[in-house]
Image (cartoon, rainbow, N blue to C red; front, side, top):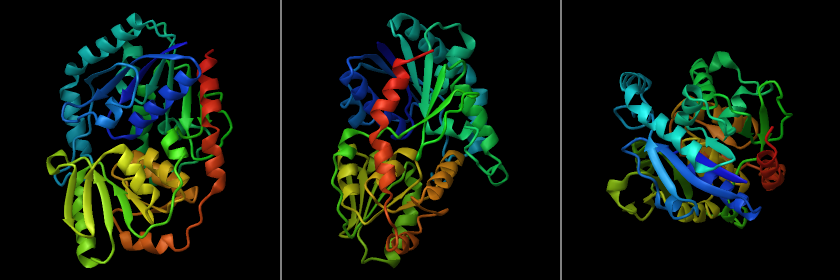
Length: 357
């Protein structure tokens, strides 16, 4: 079968999921004809993705989250105003996605949470079936059990998630644990899509703390904690291209430009991991048996953190409270059942993609 991927290009999670799924499909004799990536003009596709896939890569302009003044969290007011008043500029992207689907010869479109794909199916009649894949679709599962009163912004997130999947024939919801199929909403809980490099890693327990932040404004938290705890080694990854590949503050604090191979190598040898709670890296840390501090920067990550905490993965905070992470790491016990669940991903996900109603 021939598949066309459409990927949301903000952050690294959806990109690495696409990389993994392409390899699994190729191993089963299928073909990925193209990978279309939606991204804002200021986001640059990381080299690890461009060089790590076999299919041709194209990109189109998509909606983006505008950061707050301190470059920590998305500013929802700025984001809504900017994208609402500038929505007309996305119509060429919607048309481009539609045209490419029709001309690609693909049997199935796989959408990694990209809004323009959902809108293409909303505004146009497209006969190629679309399957959506992402952790966010699990939030719509009848048994997910989110306490909505604690997360009022989840209503807006649910609306956005549904827009990404207009007329989808199936939703593959990446999950920390098995759940029953939700036939009413067309949601199938499947294991996280972790790359072979992660599965083949043999982690060891080091003494340094490892971390990842999408928005570099969180670096102030890290540097403040470092000034108060200069004896603890910190190795953090970010997307600050202006700082170069390696930005060494001193012998105990280094910031690295996001590089996937180096990121995984450093994770495998760390004591614990701190992150802004993106689903993919949380799963990677769980698989390697690393205790996690999650610092959500928006509602999706807040729910990720909620779900990960009830799965025993780690703790959550509104800032990089690394002291609490060190304390948590002393009593943390890895979950071997999660590793078994992850190792079943290939068979379960490929089977769902090969059998489209």
